[in-house]
Length: 357
Image (cartoon, rainbow, N blue to C red; front, side):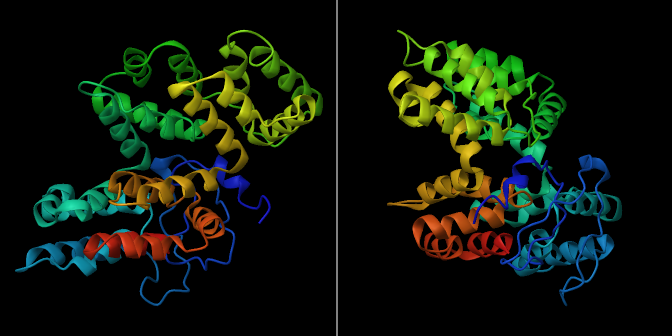
């Protein structure tokens, strides 16, 4: 498959205005022009679909109103509207609903839906930055911290996405994300997360071979080449270099030291720090592959981790979900859709499957 999706690593939330269900899965998803989330184009509906020609916000709001008004809820209508619109379009539907019917769409859906179906529908009504901010806050509030969730979000987002999440966090919780992360983590793990929260990764495409060689040498000297790991070199390289540059560094490391960078990290670090470093390496190598693996783990064995399933499908929907599905198929010899089909049920299953298209 090569690197045809590598651009998608650098897309920010809502920047791909390709509505679900409108892109044949054989086509690579093309990023559209980046725009701030508040000024996104809203009528990027291709006219290939008979059911959704053009985006009509009033019509969508009316359909949702009708779906929740009668005796019994019209779940099919709710699924169709929510799954066939972009995050930016759903914001407009929310505003229109409020101005027309005087109620918050979230509250209406809360009273009509339940379980994982409700959780997914409500997740779709948030802007991606707000949803991620809420997930991070949930990971840190109360006793104990869900470090895996901090790693999954902070180690995989673009600069633009991290900045948007920090703004959303401040707006929603009146606190800075940095200060909460600082208060909830410590040591080298805290340091790598702080580096990532600076959101100053180079996101260009240039590869400097000399730098790759130098970085590989620095990583070796900071890790295996001495007693104790000097995390500063790792943070500098893993949190700041562009993904192509990192791939060149990993290659140089392999040539120089004769082993994979992953092997070195496994041997030199442990716990959450190890997980964070390995996630950064995985994401630089193949971000859709990383998410495919998380999805697979959320469904394998007895019981399903619905929270992870919902979070990844919702947050990657407009970024690289197409590529994630291809990687899933390639790695596990079955489609993501079939796996979801056999692991979920009811309207929850229907909504997730609608989001895959």
